[in-house]
Amino acid sequence: MVIGGGASGMACAVMLARKGVRVCVLERGERLGRKLSATGNGQGNVTNRFMGAEHYFSDDREKVARALARFSEEDTVRFLESMGGIFLPDARGRIYPCGRQASAVTDLFRRELSRLGVCVRTGTQVRELVCERDVFCARGEWGEEDASAAVLSAGGCAAPAFGTDGSAYSLAQGFGHTVVPCFPALVQLQTEPSLRGLKGVRVDANVRLLRGKEEIYATRGDVLFTENGVSGDAVFRVSSYANTGDLLLLDFLPDVSERRLSEAFDVGGDLLCIVGNGLARIIVKRAGGDWAKTLGLVKRFPLEVSGTSGFSNAQVTRGGIPLCETDEALMSRLQNGLYFTGEILNVDGECGGYNLQWAFTSAWLVAEGFVCN
Ligand SMILES: Cc1cc2nc3c(=O)[nH]c(=O)nc-3n(C[C@H](O)[C@H](O)[C@H](O)COP(=O)(O)OP(=O)(O)OC[C@H]3O[C@@H](n4cnc5c(N)ncnc54)[C@H](O)[C@@H]3O)c2cc1C
Image (cartoon, rainbow, N blue to C red; front, side, top):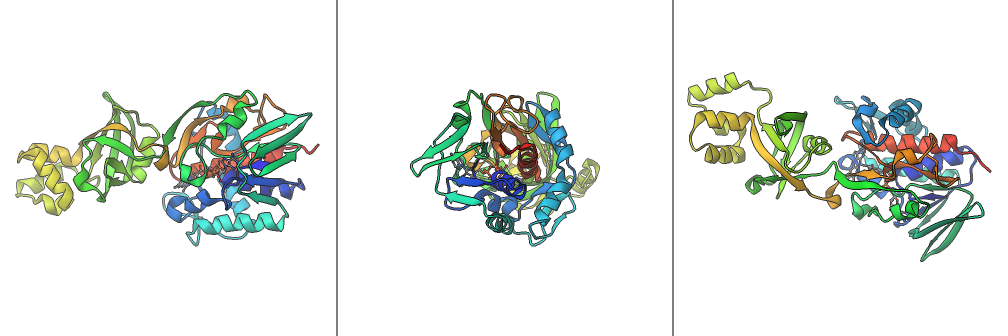
């Protein structure tokens, strides 16, 4: 039985069924793959051409590297295309279905599961999982289901609106597994000041993350001002590395040198024509008419990280079941026949398709290593 019908659970079920294994998927929601349908702003960024373990966080990154070497981004594309659809990268290496519709990817899975005769039970939240005399039994208000092996694919704590509220960790803890403390990742950052007046404004900026004097990470991309801080793809990438108290330095004109900016100011540069209305007002107010300060704020606007917007707004979970408690097929070292896939494990990736790649890679490891009794 596969517990959780999200990206990794559906993939694992398809891969197992193609091997001839009889599979049943237990999904607490009323539909399979609801989160998958929401990925990549609804466009489904399923993997990335620039793959590598350096894009992941885990207690065992080398194991992640070995896993990716066995089931790579190319394997993901081949696997997804084996169910229909065509997948292509954008200029930044992010791979999407050509139709740019994540729900169409979910539909590929639903169709393939049905074609393979996989039993799918929705509305079945597993509240208890036990193994007695080599038989796993999953129980809930809906009844119970028995199987010779169980795959825990129930996700983490991020985005509880999609059925993942962290309650599934207790199913693994029942077998003696530990849980590496969980934090929201790929999430909006709350900042001080919060620049509420800019809410809704989106800019293309260079973002540097500083801890004391040390630069921890730098990236370029969209920064979207929110009620309490900043969001957008550049911020999501930074959020993987950020701690409370770190400093964000935003360069609002990454393609313009300080010299050129200074020359524009020398001839009476109009900030409105340089950075746009909302930002100009805030920068002018802060700089108090001092052009050196104005220039500094355009190129290095400081925001202190005061927290994140929490699991409800996060895309993934940092933490989970440690990889070191599983073997190379992601089978539990504590309970024979119990496997893990996806985000429930202590693996999370950067923004850009890395988390779905882990969902598919981990699914393949389980299906490949699974031996029928
Ligand atoms: C808004 C959003 C956008 C994202 N965009 C991207 C993207 O573009 N690219 C990318 O790589 N990643 C993206 N991610 C992350 C990615 O979706 C997840 O990392 C991935 O779906 C994890 O797969 P999973 O199978 O481990 O868990 P999930 O897909 O979360 O599936 C877990 C399933 O288990 C079910 N479940 C939970 N507990 C139980 C239980 N006790 N009994 C039965 N069922 C249970 C849940 O209902 C859920 O359906 C995004 C995430 C979010 C929230």
